Length: 311
Image 1 (cartoon, rainbow, N blue to C red):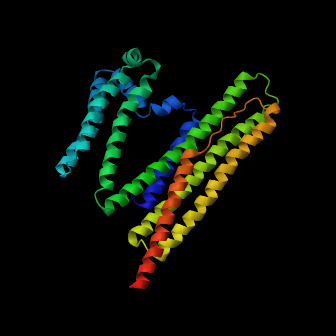
Image 2: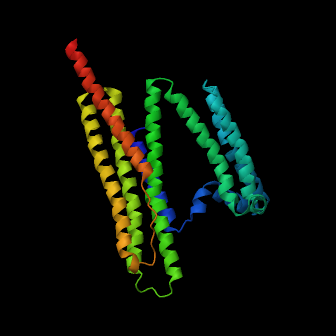
Image 3: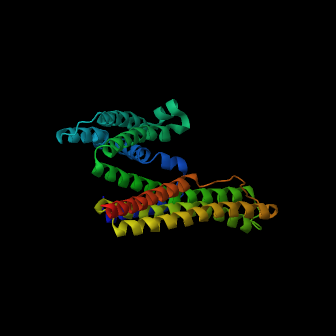
Protein backbone atom coordinates (compact mmCIF):
# COMPACT_ATOMS: atom_id res chain seq x y z
CA UNK A 1 0.00 0.00 0.00
CA UNK A 2 1.24 3.47 -0.85
CA UNK A 3 2.18 5.84 1.96
CA UNK A 4 -0.51 8.34 0.96
CA UNK A 5 -3.20 5.66 0.99
CA UNK A 6 -2.03 4.47 4.40
CA UNK A 7 -2.17 8.02 5.75
CA UNK A 8 -5.72 8.48 4.44
CA UNK A 9 -6.82 5.16 5.96
CA UNK A 10 -5.35 5.98 9.38
CA UNK A 11 -6.81 9.49 9.22
CA UNK A 12 -10.26 8.08 8.46
CA UNK A 13 -9.91 5.66 11.37
CA UNK A 14 -8.92 8.51 13.70
CA UNK A 15 -11.91 10.61 12.55
CA UNK A 16 -14.31 7.71 13.15
CA UNK A 17 -12.82 7.07 16.58
CA UNK A 18 -13.20 10.73 17.57
CA UNK A 19 -16.79 10.80 16.28
CA UNK A 20 -17.73 7.61 18.10
CA UNK A 21 -16.11 8.85 21.30
CA UNK A 22 -17.91 12.21 21.01
CA UNK A 23 -21.23 10.40 20.59
CA UNK A 24 -20.59 8.53 23.83
CA UNK A 25 -19.87 5.11 22.36
CA UNK A 26 -19.31 2.47 25.01
CA UNK A 27 -16.60 -0.17 24.93
CA UNK A 28 -19.08 -3.02 24.35
CA UNK A 29 -20.49 -1.11 21.37
CA UNK A 30 -17.02 -0.96 19.86
CA UNK A 31 -16.52 -4.68 20.41
CA UNK A 32 -19.88 -5.33 18.72
CA UNK A 33 -19.05 -3.22 15.65
CA UNK A 34 -19.99 -3.64 12.80
CA UNK A 35 -22.23 -6.72 12.99
CA UNK A 36 -24.51 -5.48 15.79
CA UNK A 37 -25.51 -2.25 13.99
CA UNK A 38 -25.96 -4.18 10.73
CA UNK A 39 -28.10 -6.77 12.52
CA UNK A 40 -30.25 -4.06 14.09
CA UNK A 41 -30.72 -2.32 10.73
CA UNK A 42 -31.66 -5.59 9.00
CA UNK A 43 -34.17 -6.34 11.76
CA UNK A 44 -35.87 -2.96 11.32
CA UNK A 45 -35.88 -3.44 7.55
CA UNK A 46 -37.36 -6.94 7.92
CA UNK A 47 -40.17 -5.69 10.18
CA UNK A 48 -41.09 -2.87 7.79
CA UNK A 49 -43.19 -5.13 5.55
CA UNK A 50 -43.04 -7.97 3.03
CA UNK A 51 -40.86 -6.01 0.60
CA UNK A 52 -38.52 -4.95 3.40
CA UNK A 53 -38.36 -8.53 4.66
CA UNK A 54 -37.36 -9.85 1.24
CA UNK A 55 -34.77 -7.09 0.81
CA UNK A 56 -33.34 -7.85 4.26
CA UNK A 57 -32.97 -11.54 3.42
CA UNK A 58 -31.13 -10.74 0.17
CA UNK A 59 -28.78 -8.30 1.92
CA UNK A 60 -28.22 -10.80 4.73
CA UNK A 61 -27.21 -13.54 2.29
CA UNK A 62 -24.96 -11.22 0.25
CA UNK A 63 -23.12 -9.99 3.36
CA UNK A 64 -22.59 -13.53 4.63
CA UNK A 65 -21.22 -14.67 1.26
CA UNK A 66 -18.49 -12.00 1.14
CA UNK A 67 -15.74 -14.23 2.66
CA UNK A 68 -16.82 -17.16 0.45
CA UNK A 69 -16.68 -14.83 -2.57
CA UNK A 70 -13.13 -13.87 -1.66
CA UNK A 71 -12.28 -17.57 -1.37
CA UNK A 72 -13.68 -18.22 -4.86
CA UNK A 73 -11.89 -15.17 -6.30
CA UNK A 74 -8.55 -16.38 -4.95
CA UNK A 75 -9.18 -19.83 -6.37
CA UNK A 76 -9.91 -18.41 -9.81
CA UNK A 77 -6.65 -16.45 -9.57
CA UNK A 78 -4.78 -19.69 -8.95
CA UNK A 79 -4.09 -18.96 -5.29
CA UNK A 80 -4.71 -22.24 -3.52
CA UNK A 81 -3.67 -22.08 0.11
CA UNK A 82 -5.04 -24.10 3.00
CA UNK A 83 -5.60 -21.05 5.22
CA UNK A 84 -8.24 -19.88 2.70
CA UNK A 85 -10.53 -22.50 4.20
CA UNK A 86 -10.93 -20.06 7.09
CA UNK A 87 -12.76 -17.78 4.66
CA UNK A 88 -15.42 -20.45 4.22
CA UNK A 89 -15.58 -20.80 7.98
CA UNK A 90 -15.97 -17.01 8.14
CA UNK A 91 -19.02 -17.16 5.88
CA UNK A 92 -20.54 -19.87 8.05
CA UNK A 93 -19.84 -17.77 11.16
CA UNK A 94 -21.46 -14.76 9.51
CA UNK A 95 -24.64 -16.72 8.73
CA UNK A 96 -24.83 -17.83 12.36
CA UNK A 97 -23.80 -14.59 14.10
CA UNK A 98 -25.78 -12.20 11.93
CA UNK A 99 -28.92 -14.33 12.20
CA UNK A 100 -28.76 -14.19 15.99
CA UNK A 101 -28.05 -10.45 15.94
CA UNK A 102 -31.11 -9.94 13.74
CA UNK A 103 -33.03 -11.86 16.41
CA UNK A 104 -31.60 -10.37 19.64
CA UNK A 105 -33.99 -12.20 21.96
CA UNK A 106 -32.64 -15.54 20.74
CA UNK A 107 -29.06 -14.26 21.04
CA UNK A 108 -29.55 -13.10 24.64
CA UNK A 109 -31.03 -16.46 25.63
CA UNK A 110 -27.87 -18.20 24.41
CA UNK A 111 -25.17 -15.69 25.34
CA UNK A 112 -26.80 -13.33 27.88
CA UNK A 113 -25.61 -9.70 27.86
CA UNK A 114 -22.37 -10.53 26.03
CA UNK A 115 -24.22 -11.72 22.93
CA UNK A 116 -23.25 -8.83 20.65
CA UNK A 117 -19.50 -8.73 21.44
CA UNK A 118 -19.29 -12.54 21.45
CA UNK A 119 -21.00 -13.03 18.08
CA UNK A 120 -19.11 -10.16 16.48
CA UNK A 121 -15.86 -11.47 17.92
CA UNK A 122 -16.42 -14.92 16.40
CA UNK A 123 -16.19 -13.47 12.90
CA UNK A 124 -13.26 -11.20 13.70
CA UNK A 125 -11.28 -14.07 15.24
CA UNK A 126 -11.58 -16.11 12.04
CA UNK A 127 -10.65 -13.11 9.88
CA UNK A 128 -7.64 -12.34 12.10
CA UNK A 129 -6.51 -15.98 11.98
CA UNK A 130 -6.69 -15.97 8.16
CA UNK A 131 -4.74 -12.70 7.95
CA UNK A 132 -2.00 -13.92 10.33
CA UNK A 133 -1.56 -17.22 8.50
CA UNK A 134 -1.51 -15.45 5.13
CA UNK A 135 1.11 -13.00 6.40
CA UNK A 136 3.27 -15.83 7.74
CA UNK A 137 3.19 -17.58 4.39
CA UNK A 138 3.96 -14.31 2.62
CA UNK A 139 6.87 -13.57 4.94
CA UNK A 140 8.61 -16.85 4.10
CA UNK A 141 7.85 -16.76 0.38
CA UNK A 142 10.72 -14.51 -0.76
CA UNK A 143 12.38 -11.18 0.02
CA UNK A 144 9.60 -9.12 -1.55
CA UNK A 145 7.04 -11.10 0.39
CA UNK A 146 8.91 -10.42 3.62
CA UNK A 147 8.97 -6.69 2.83
CA UNK A 148 5.23 -6.66 2.13
CA UNK A 149 4.58 -8.58 5.32
CA UNK A 150 6.66 -6.11 7.32
CA UNK A 151 4.79 -3.14 5.89
CA UNK A 152 1.41 -4.72 6.59
CA UNK A 153 2.44 -5.45 10.17
CA UNK A 154 3.53 -1.83 10.59
CA UNK A 155 0.17 -0.66 9.27
CA UNK A 156 -1.72 -3.00 11.62
CA UNK A 157 0.27 -1.74 14.61
CA UNK A 158 -0.35 1.86 13.53
CA UNK A 159 -4.10 1.17 13.33
CA UNK A 160 -4.05 -0.21 16.88
CA UNK A 161 -2.23 2.84 18.22
CA UNK A 162 -4.60 5.20 16.39
CA UNK A 163 -7.54 3.40 18.02
CA UNK A 164 -5.95 3.70 21.47
CA UNK A 165 -4.97 7.32 20.93
CA UNK A 166 -8.25 8.64 19.52
CA UNK A 167 -10.84 6.40 21.17
CA UNK A 168 -9.76 4.12 24.01
CA UNK A 169 -7.82 6.60 26.14
CA UNK A 170 -10.26 9.53 25.71
CA UNK A 171 -13.26 7.26 26.32
CA UNK A 172 -11.71 5.87 29.51
CA UNK A 173 -10.94 9.38 30.78
CA UNK A 174 -14.49 10.58 30.01
CA UNK A 175 -15.90 7.50 31.74
CA UNK A 176 -13.78 8.14 34.86
CA UNK A 177 -14.85 11.79 35.00
CA UNK A 178 -18.52 10.84 34.64
CA UNK A 179 -18.22 8.23 37.38
CA UNK A 180 -16.50 10.74 39.64
CA UNK A 181 -19.22 13.35 39.04
CA UNK A 182 -22.00 10.84 39.72
CA UNK A 183 -20.33 9.74 42.97
CA UNK A 184 -20.01 13.33 44.24
CA UNK A 185 -23.13 15.47 44.44
CA UNK A 186 -21.02 18.49 45.39
CA UNK A 187 -18.86 19.33 42.36
CA UNK A 188 -16.64 21.88 44.09
CA UNK A 189 -13.11 20.65 44.67
CA UNK A 190 -13.20 18.12 41.85
CA UNK A 191 -11.09 20.21 39.48
CA UNK A 192 -7.79 18.75 40.69
CA UNK A 193 -9.14 15.21 40.33
CA UNK A 194 -10.30 16.01 36.79
CA UNK A 195 -6.83 17.34 36.01
CA UNK A 196 -5.15 14.15 37.26
CA UNK A 197 -7.54 11.96 35.25
CA UNK A 198 -6.74 13.91 32.10
CA UNK A 199 -3.05 13.76 32.97
CA UNK A 200 -3.22 9.97 33.30
CA UNK A 201 -4.87 9.79 29.88
CA UNK A 202 -2.16 12.01 28.39
CA UNK A 203 0.49 9.83 30.03
CA UNK A 204 -0.99 6.88 28.15
CA UNK A 205 -1.37 8.86 24.93
CA UNK A 206 2.24 10.04 24.72
CA UNK A 207 3.72 6.52 24.33
CA UNK A 208 1.11 5.77 21.64
CA UNK A 209 1.98 8.96 19.75
CA UNK A 210 5.71 8.27 20.01
CA UNK A 211 5.18 4.70 18.83
CA UNK A 212 3.18 5.97 15.86
CA UNK A 213 6.05 8.22 14.82
CA UNK A 214 8.51 5.35 15.34
CA UNK A 215 6.39 3.20 13.01
CA UNK A 216 6.41 6.03 10.46
CA UNK A 217 10.21 6.13 10.59
CA UNK A 218 10.31 2.33 10.29
CA UNK A 219 8.16 2.54 7.18
CA UNK A 220 10.51 5.08 5.60
CA UNK A 221 13.48 2.94 6.57
CA UNK A 222 11.95 -0.16 4.98
CA UNK A 223 11.22 1.77 1.78
CA UNK A 224 14.82 2.98 1.62
CA UNK A 225 16.21 -0.46 2.45
CA UNK A 226 14.07 -2.06 -0.27
CA UNK A 227 15.79 0.13 -2.86
CA UNK A 228 19.32 -0.19 -1.48
CA UNK A 229 19.98 -1.73 1.90
CA UNK A 230 23.45 -0.16 2.16
CA UNK A 231 22.78 3.33 0.81
CA UNK A 232 23.59 6.53 2.69
CA UNK A 233 19.89 7.31 2.96
CA UNK A 234 19.25 3.97 4.63
CA UNK A 235 22.08 4.55 7.10
CA UNK A 236 20.86 8.10 7.85
CA UNK A 237 17.31 6.90 8.48
CA UNK A 238 18.65 4.05 10.59
CA UNK A 239 20.60 6.42 12.82
CA UNK A 240 17.63 8.81 13.05
CA UNK A 241 15.36 5.96 14.10
CA UNK A 242 17.86 4.79 16.71
CA UNK A 243 18.17 8.26 18.25
CA UNK A 244 14.40 8.75 18.28
CA UNK A 245 13.79 5.35 19.91
CA UNK A 246 16.28 6.12 22.68
CA UNK A 247 14.62 9.49 23.33
CA UNK A 248 11.14 7.94 23.21
CA UNK A 249 12.01 5.18 25.66
CA UNK A 250 13.52 7.73 28.06
CA UNK A 251 10.45 9.99 27.84
CA UNK A 252 7.99 7.12 28.32
CA UNK A 253 9.71 5.74 31.40
CA UNK A 254 10.14 9.16 33.03
CA UNK A 255 6.53 10.11 32.27
CA UNK A 256 5.22 6.90 33.80
CA UNK A 257 7.25 7.51 36.97
CA UNK A 258 6.34 11.21 37.07
CA UNK A 259 2.57 10.65 36.93
CA UNK A 260 2.81 8.02 39.68
CA UNK A 261 4.82 10.33 41.96
CA UNK A 262 2.49 13.28 41.28
CA UNK A 263 -0.54 11.24 42.35
CA UNK A 264 1.32 10.18 45.47
CA UNK A 265 2.03 13.81 46.39
CA UNK A 266 -1.52 15.02 45.64
CA UNK A 267 -3.25 11.97 47.17
CA UNK A 268 -4.85 13.85 50.13
CA UNK A 269 -6.56 16.32 47.77
CA UNK A 270 -7.70 13.79 45.15
CA UNK A 271 -11.07 12.00 44.97
CA UNK A 272 -9.99 9.81 42.06
CA UNK A 273 -6.61 8.16 42.18
CA UNK A 274 -4.93 5.17 40.58
CA UNK A 275 -1.70 3.74 41.94
CA UNK A 276 -1.70 1.07 39.27
CA UNK A 277 1.64 1.26 37.46
CA UNK A 278 0.71 1.22 33.76
CA UNK A 279 4.10 0.70 32.16
CA UNK A 280 3.79 1.10 28.37
CA UNK A 281 5.02 -2.40 27.56
CA UNK A 282 3.70 -2.53 23.99
CA UNK A 283 5.11 0.84 22.97
CA UNK A 284 8.43 0.01 24.62
CA UNK A 285 8.51 -3.26 22.68
CA UNK A 286 7.86 -1.39 19.42
CA UNK A 287 10.61 1.12 20.21
CA UNK A 288 13.09 -1.64 21.10
CA UNK A 289 12.25 -3.57 17.91
CA UNK A 290 12.74 -0.43 15.84
CA UNK A 291 16.01 0.29 17.62
CA UNK A 292 17.23 -3.25 16.93
CA UNK A 293 16.25 -2.96 13.26
CA UNK A 294 18.12 0.31 12.88
CA UNK A 295 21.22 -1.12 14.55
CA UNK A 296 21.23 -4.21 12.35
CA UNK A 297 20.96 -2.15 9.16
CA UNK A 298 23.69 0.21 10.30
CA UNK A 299 26.06 -2.61 11.22
CA UNK A 300 25.29 -4.35 7.92
CA UNK A 301 26.39 -1.30 5.97
CA UNK A 302 29.60 -1.02 7.99
CA UNK A 303 30.35 -4.70 7.37
CA UNK A 304 29.77 -4.28 3.63
CA UNK A 305 32.13 -1.30 3.51
CA UNK A 306 34.80 -3.31 5.34
CA UNK A 307 34.40 -6.19 2.88
CA UNK A 308 34.67 -3.78 -0.06
CA UNK A 309 37.98 -2.48 1.32
CA UNK A 310 39.39 -6.00 1.39
CA UNK A 311 38.25 -6.66 -2.16
